[in-house]
Length: 328
Image (cartoon, rainbow, N blue to C red; front, side, top):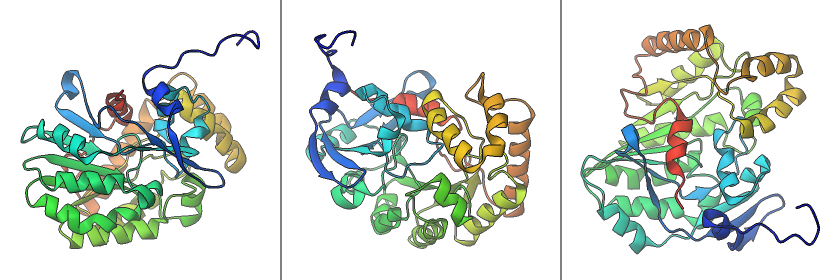
């Protein structure tokens, strides 16, 4: 505002709903709020029109330094990218409304859960929105369902997912960027330890739920060595995962605001290289992505793992998928 007596800007759509959200609970650094929701299931357009997305929460408490979804809060006029991990909105779940939306889907439709927020972040232990949605999916038939998370809490619902699998196709995509627990704690401060995520892979596969492990994102000179990626793939295969993928980091402006200061603190020797490589584009181009693709393919073949596309998972450009998620 130019002057103190200027009227505040009028909020509309999701920003208005967020501003009127009731506070559910507050921890030292995190607020949980309840968000009124007009529609639970979003739909793509163009070539992505056959894809539906479901996000039980807005924001994510895990605080991953590379998170591409931080700009989701900008739609609610929350411009500080770190608010994405401090203000967590639990959608006001109405089972009857959600089931009515599900009934409009057709056999063969694809639904991805957790495209712009982790459906098994700490908020799920309190509010069980994801669990309620899965219970509704269990009564459907013929859907192709994917769940993306980096939380071992997903194993809590192994038996429910197995029941869903009796009448639908379902696959869990579990992100494990590294097996180095110290590095994982730096990159993903509040996400479960890699060992816990691997235990979740084992529990899900034992229940008959197929699992893909995603070593996303691959960060140059941080977790991109063949040894690092091989360790993740080998452990994934050992615990029953059937597919593995890894793709390079991309940094949209909202992610750069968090990731570059993180580098300055923990990897100062890499700051110049990252600034140069991401100065003109959010995406790494040229030889590097080709090298990583070849490296991953070799590792995948070594452990007899399928690739992610063969396992029917989200597209490699998750930003494109995230653009489909915004539902007013």
